[in-house]
Amino acid sequence: MEVVLETKDLTKNYGEVIAVSKVSLRVEKSALFGLLGPNGSGKTTMIKMLTGQTSLTGGSATVLGIDVTRDPIGVRRQVGIIPEQETPPSFLTAIEYLKFVAAVRNIPDIETKADWWFDFLDFADKKNVLCKDLSRGTRQKLMFTQAFIHEPALALIDEPLINFDPIMQDVVKDYLSGYVRKGRTIFISTHILEVAEEICSGFAILHKGKLLHTGPVAELTGRNEHLPSFFLSLVRKDRNV
Ligand SMILES: Nc1ncnc2c1ncn2[C@@H]1O[C@H](COP(=O)(O)OP(=O)(O)OP(=O)(O)O)[C@@H](O)[C@H]1O
Ligand SMILES: [Mg+2]
Image 1 (cartoon, rainbow, N blue to C red):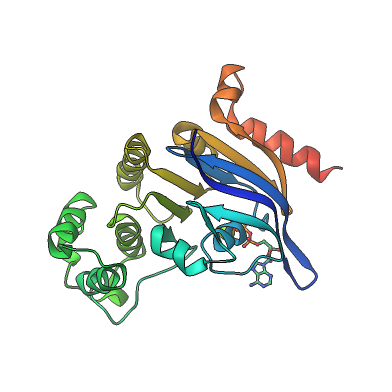
Image 2: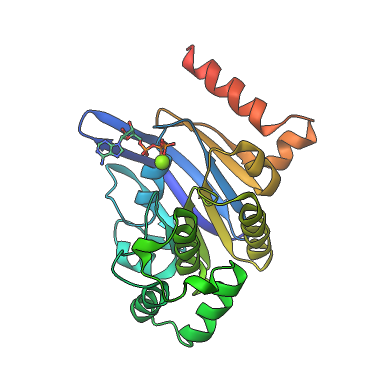
């Protein structure tokens, strides 16, 4: 199987704080991979390192065959990214923002593609509205659109379902599941363990920057175990060590 993302002893320190500590992970092509972990366990820091948004303190990471330390811009050019709590620029309209992204990413036929996304995520009425006047969920729809509009081989999303209503969560879950069936790969962080169990093929659990577990979801379900209870018992055990 083709490996799309691999880390070896990946480490990040912020001064005294060890945010990520010697994490070794492997994600194969066509996986929908979920990065799980309590608040402050290092998920966002991992995604930032994997997308060239912050430097590595130690170890290495390869994304789509590109070494993130050697060529962080090369990685960012190839992948789709939704950073944690990111919102589009307040002073552009929704369509202006997508045109801006298209210019940076050299995406052809942006008007047609954007219209498909406005319809698909049900926000065509907001096309010409300034981003500052969009609701949080609609801003997230726009962030989702910019991450996928160029159909990247790999998308990394920090909490994909945050701010979405139940109907939109359903639409997005279906989209993500269909996306990986087309041979592309998705790496998400999430706190919604039921969703991870439902849509993810593989997962990893971080706690205090350390990797507690990684493996296929089917391994758990095969032994009649559920991801939420597995997560809770593993993290609680580690807290008591
Ligand atoms: N820029 C920064 N400077 C200093 N410390 C940081 C910085 N960013 C993150 N940290 C610290 O690194 C650790 C990991 O944080 P991170 O944001 O990666 O966690 P997380 O798993 O994404 O948490 P959450 O579930 O709350 O989003 C925390 O202790 C956090 O305080
Ligand atoms: Mg985070």
